[in-house]
Length: 169
Image (tube, rainbow, N blue to C red; front, side):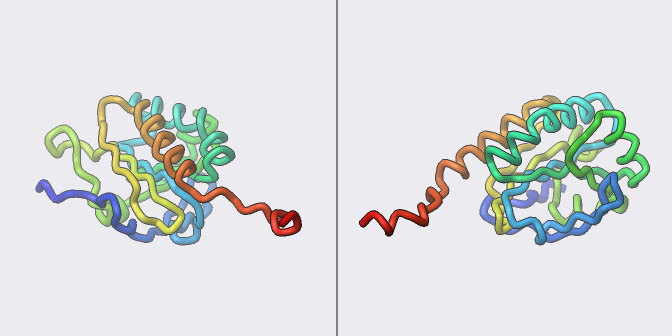
């Protein structure tokens, strides 16, 4: 099955999943750019590196780019709680227990179909997909790939207008 996943320019499917704190995160309620990263499993080496790398950048993602981040994998909320607590994660990791959201995004599998893929999507504030980054081996590179897209998005955004500018005409 080589069905392509969510493509650039398409609107991401909406989803509502529970995070490690029991909070339901709904994609369509987040009115800012969103990095959605799918990873194979909690507490595995690559996924740990990836979560730690994203966690190190979460303040920059939120403050500098006005964006947010969620990680998604198929383990349950308890597994998410343990993983988030071990790593001190300050962003939501979501339990997609029946892989419904992974399926909705058509995330490609890795390792000849044996592993759930490690794929990161960057969505704009309307949920439109700006980039798809698929790399199972280099978990850390997902963070750089995401922040580069967010930086481009920020650079292309119109500058906020100065409410006082009309006073000085």
